[in-house]
Length: 197
Image (tube, rainbow, N blue to C red; front, side):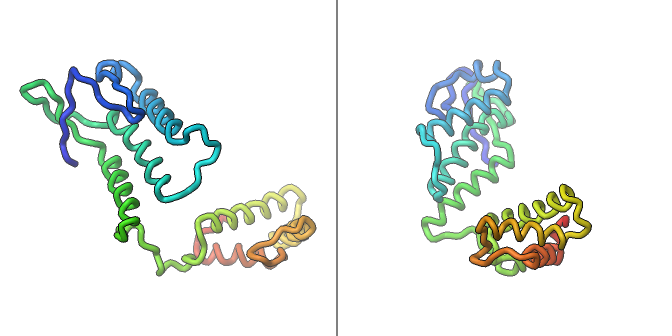
C-alpha cells in the first residue's frame, strides 16, 4: 500500500466531483457517507439510462466509481506531517480492487493479467456463468415441483416439468426438454460436486 497525504483542513475531492470538507465527512456516519457517494457516482454514470450495456469500458468505469467512493472512508491514518497533513494508506481490499480495475483496462492494450486468464483446465470450462446459473435455477425448479406436487422421485418431477416446458415451447441449447435433460444436468453437477440436488 502506498501512503498518500490528505490535508486535515482542506477539502477532499469526491467521486461525483463536489468538494466536501473532511470535517463534514467525518461528522457523517461513515457507512452512510460511503453509500451516498456510491449512489451519486452510479447515478452520474448511468446518466438517466434505464439500462447500461455490459462493455469492458462500462464495467471498468462502474467499478472505479464504487472504489473511489468508498476509498476515503476506509483509509487508515498512519502518520501526520509537520504541516498537519494526514499520511494515509488504503484498505488492502480496495488496493486489490484498484489492481483489478487496471488489469481490466490493460485488456484493451493486449495485456492479460494471470487472474483474468481463462481456466482451461476446469471441467466445466465450456459453460458460461450465465449458463451455470440457468442450470442451477432449472434444478431448483425440479425440486420445487417435486415438493409442491408430491412426486416421489426427482425423475418423476423432471418428467412433469419437461412436459410443461415443451408445451410452452421452451428449449435448452436448441433442444426440447425431456426428463433426461434434468437428470443429466443433476448428474453433471453432482460429478463436479456443485449440486445440492
